[in-house]
Amino acid sequence: KDGAKTEEKKVLNVGTEATFAPFEFMDKGEVTGFDVDLLNAVAEEAGYEVKIDNTGWDAMFAGLQSKQLDLGMAGVTITDERVESYDFSHPYFESKTMIAFKDKVDIKKAEDLKGKKLGVQNGTTGQFSAEKVVGKNSPDISKYETAALMFQALQGDNVEAAVTDIAVALEYQKKNPDAGIQTVSDDKAFEPEYYGIVFPKGSELVDEFNTALNTVLDNGKYAEIYKKWFDE
Ligand code: GLN
Image 1 (cartoon, rainbow, N blue to C red):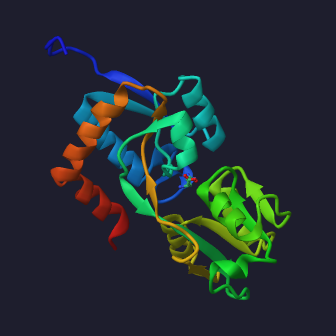
Image 2 (tube, rainbow, N blue to C red; image 1 turned 90 degrees about the horizontal axis):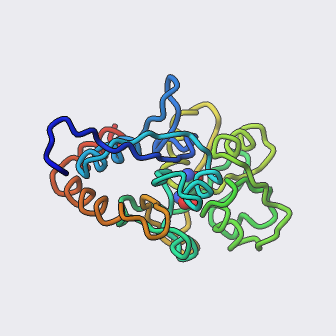
């Protein structure tokens, strides 16, 4: 900001949970995905560099609380509860709950989750959606640390259905064509959700990132990144 050409960009520490393809996942030892490309574009526009660590979901929120992390980028849904403890950017992606299950299981709507063994990623909106249908402390819900472990449980028939985010369920289905995975959503039961970049409460970065996000949405960069990850 002093105009010196040699000025080094500030490096921001970012946490994520990198088993959430296509948003963030590990590829050859690097975190990659839609969120990574978007964050890099927004950060560059705002004049920062980012260092993204696969901290895991819970540690990401803990790192934001303690301010060891500058921000989190992990397909994080902006919820009423979370905005009490964290700041969020403007929404950058619309999502909703999707149920993934095997061919042999019959699920057509949210109500059909009742009485089934369910897998969710702990502390996510998938968990909250499942709880909305079968009750908060239902013994039928198994909570997994990562999305990968949740899908493993589905694959190994430890659970009958996984409750997660639409794009992640569809990606899993697409990447595992022989697994006999079905998916269904239920717009009557589950509300639309919106992802935001998450910051410690009171972070000065929020305004700068919102301005940069608007630019990336306006100048075609967002569309380019979207196309890369979501168009065939
Ligand atoms: N969007 C969901 C949530 O915020 C899941 C995010 C994730 O598992 N990375 O709870």
